[in-house]
Image (cartoon, rainbow, N blue to C red; front, side, top):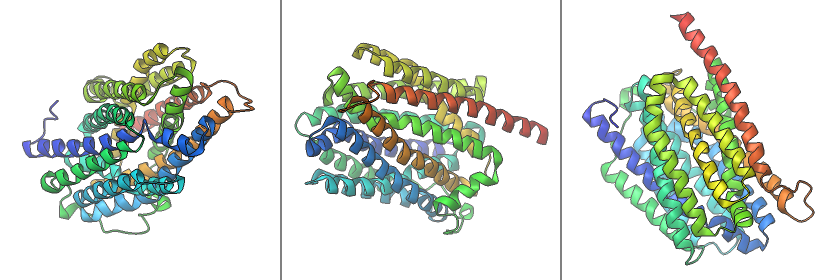
Length: 413
């Protein structure tokens, strides 16, 4: 598990991973119950699917606006204060949603969560600060494993607490985010030295300005398209999975939470154990494409799965998807300077947020016309088939773009 870096830096990695786990546990707790809470307000499974997609889009829209600002702020003031403010904001926001008397309060909560969770960009920038470029795929794999570990505990805990009421998990999430704030306040060190900081600029700290960085590097633009498609496909789960599982397999919060825990365990194994060796042996490009292809197969099988057991089995090839994100991040971070890592992560999150706005709306609509009254596309797995097609396209573009970038590097040498 060692990254072969100095002891102080290994400790810093441990601190940031624990903070990430606590935040992700808090987010995962509410996943099994939020769609059901929406369904209670609207009284329809199909309409809840559409509105849940809207709520995810609101969250992602705020990330789109806030991520470049947060990335640029972390480049000037350091990573630590950004992470601490985010944890405190998330804690307050979960309390707000726990008290929500109607959909408008829930919508406001999702808007605030979109801003405060944008600090995930800072987590990746933090890791770039303390890790050599050639070891970042492994480091980002550890972040992915930490996120997955949070999703192991979070949905299971949320599913269990959801049996006592759909609002109980929100209180637990607030407590988790509060614990993350306290942990970071007393333990988390700063990673960005003052001499490596970049002054804040609104020209860079907006979605368009941040993505100019991607435009300045031709190979980054192609990889950003892969990033967009990857996130676009991934949001099929946040948009329709809980409702799909309940409708097709009769799963409630407990079963959904347990399945999401299995997803987290598999992803933790892939990102925490397999990414490093695979990247060293086959290279970032081949590992990324193989992961995208595995995800394509797995997610297509989920749409086909006639039984819950078949769906669970499809999670195993789908878990290979975890190879793609760390290697994609590694390929991108090697193409910008150290002082631009926060801006790059802000731009990446902006791209992901665009996908997060469009994808839930799209997949929520697809789900509503495939299972609702007067459906004209009567196939509940249709959203998963379309997500598989998106991943297949990402694999093709990723292979072509990364190969061209590698050829350019060889020519430059």
